[in-house]
Every structure is written in C-alpha cells, then in structure tokens.
Length: 336
Image (cartoon, rainbow, N blue to C red; front, side, top):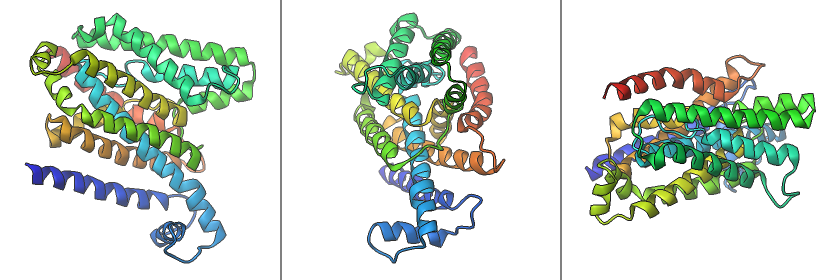
C-alpha cells in the first residue's frame, strides 16, 4: 500500500513537472522546450544567458503564470476535499459555498474603496470576506449538521448571490466604467496579472495551508463516520474543524486575491482523484493537490491560446467543465 501511494504521488509529481515546462512554451510565440529549460537553468546559475526577449517572455511572463495556476489549482482542490469532509457533504467547495464570493467582495472593497489606507492588504481583505461568508454559511446550515445536499447548495447560492450583489454595489460606487470592466473581467478568474511577487505571496499561504490540512488527515478520515465517532477516537472535533475552516478560508482568500474567483475546481478534482486514491486523506490530499495543479495549468493554457489573440477568463472554462459534474454529483447525493 505504501509503495502504491509513493508511486501515485511520484507519478502525479512527474506529470506536474512536465506540465509546467510544456505549458510554459505553449503560446503564439515560437518558443520550444529547450528555450524554457535553458531559461530556467540560467536563472538557477547552471546555464548560459538566453536571448533577452526569450528570457523576458518566459521568466517574467509565462513561468510566473504557469506556476501561479499550479499553486491556485492545488489550493482550491485541497480546500474542496477538506470542506467536503468537515461539512460531510460531497457538494461542498469554496465557490459553491459562497466563500470565494465573500473573498471577492473583501478584495474589491480594498482595491476600490481603499479600506485600511495601506494597513489592510488585498489578501487580508479577501481573507476577512471569506471568513464572514464562511461564518454565514455555517450558521445557516447549523454548523454543518444539515446533511441535505439540496439545502447546502441553496445556502451556498444564497450567500454567493448576496456577496456578488455587494461586490456589484462597491464597483458601482466607484463610478469608473473602465475600472468596473477590468474588475468584472478579473472576477471571472484571470491569471494574466501573474508576477513573481503575487506568486510568492499566494504560494507561501497556500502551501503552508496545505501542510496544515495534511496534518489533520486522520481527523478528516474520522469525520466520515460522524463527529461523535471522531470524538470517541480521541479527536478534538471542535478544534480540528475551527482550524481547518480558518485555514481553508485563508487559502481561498489567497487564491482569490491572486486570480479572482475560479469555481468548481474544488468539486471536480477531489471526486475524480477519489476514484484512484480512495478515501484516505493522507493520500487523497496530496494527489488532489497535484491533480488540481495539473488541471488548472492546462485549463489556463487552453484559455490563453484557443481563441487567440483573445483570452477567455479561466473561470469560464472551469465552469463549463465543472457544471455538468456538479449536476451528476448533486443527482447522486439527492438519491442517497
């Protein structure tokens, strides 16, 4: 079993590494894999200097974008797997529960209204919005004790619509048509603004959060059998749930602050990976994270090349893929 787990994680890791290199040369410019590898080797001190134009295109534009897609895909997928366990609902994920919408409202409030006058950063505003949205959802579903999938979905829709309206109100108060158009495009999910600085902030928060979630893998396994059973196994249920909810809100906020709201990854990827990994979160979480990173890298590559020179918001592509999966999972959940 241990050998199989290592092989699966290693296999997913190899596919992720190859995807990063391959996606970095996918585009309208004539760049090959050797150029990408050469630029990377140069910047780690192991190769000659590439042509300045090639270096700028790969190192300053494409690599940060591909790596940011990987980090956000990893984070949102793990958040989905964790939320499905702590709410004991297969439909839970940050976007459908309205957490992403809350984070978007917090981020837009900071950007448009200038709340905090520099003391409040974009990520902090998104985190505050995500926490408020999460708290409202938990109150409405009685802390996760409501197991009816339809009610959980309707609660998520309610919270999501409320914060979407709040975001629209904030943008309307700004009164700048060009800025409103830009913010609306960003809210659909875009990785076009990826730079090393935004990548670093998102990567630190999301990878640290993923590590914390992995430390609670045993508790997440126990939650499947109910909270009372988990408590009888010696797990501090309240502490574990609070820590995991705060961590997933923080990871979602970091993702939204870097790329806008990208939905359905937290629903789609964990359900697909469970077919391979089974129910053990010690294996499910790493594979889900790696699978989500691979998935979003290629969705973004498709979004920026399929309709070139136009670029489709990556959130539109994930919604087109995730909505049918959502319908199937909802149908199965309601039948149980």
